[in-house]
Image 1 (cartoon, rainbow, N blue to C red):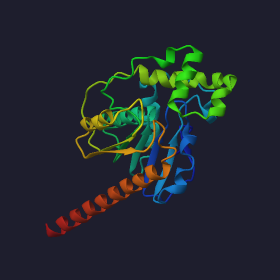
Image 2 (image 1 turned 60 degrees about the vertical axis):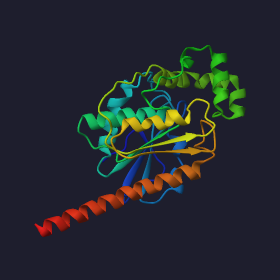
Image 3 (image 1 turned 90 degrees about the vertical axis):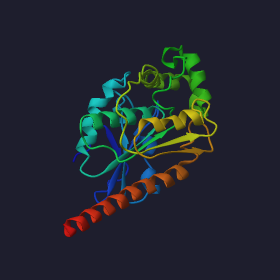
Length: 265
């Protein structure tokens, strides 16, 4: 078991029963989840996934294609698979988490026991027609403003925003060049989170995640827009804890049944 430059851990919990890998949205880094450990049960170790080109990895080249991220992410996760784990991804992060889970399952590697896809339409649905990563700077900045995820003071500092635009363009390119390839459905349950007032992801597009799992599916709407995970953080985290608890209880019940069966045999 080893951490790497691909991870940011707010609090290391060696005695935690499970790990939660959190994949950030476009333009964000692992610090988006830096305080989640303060509001989540102690049996969960929260690991923020740090992609190249941001925060402490700012000087590394950005990736613009999802396929280029999967191999190093697969290696990172398998190194930390000495205990059960589950995935949470928001927007771009949901897409990354989904494709990573598919590759882990395809290769017969440890699989997340649950995938929480947040703020992203189901992968098989066509993405927006407009290509944000190809827009001129000023037009792109206007679009970013519409998403309501960037502080107003930062948006008004045009020079500073242009400093961050390469990262945003690269992340938008990952989403906008993504092509879903049909394949075997995930065997782990999927939960989809969305904002009731998200202009980019409708409730029907959120519910369509159900076709990507052979296991249980549920979806939950929160009072907010695309970035509901910030104002609704407590409500979001209140639902993640029971996912881990439910998995542990199911695992314990399964082991207990096996012991009873063995004794009977």
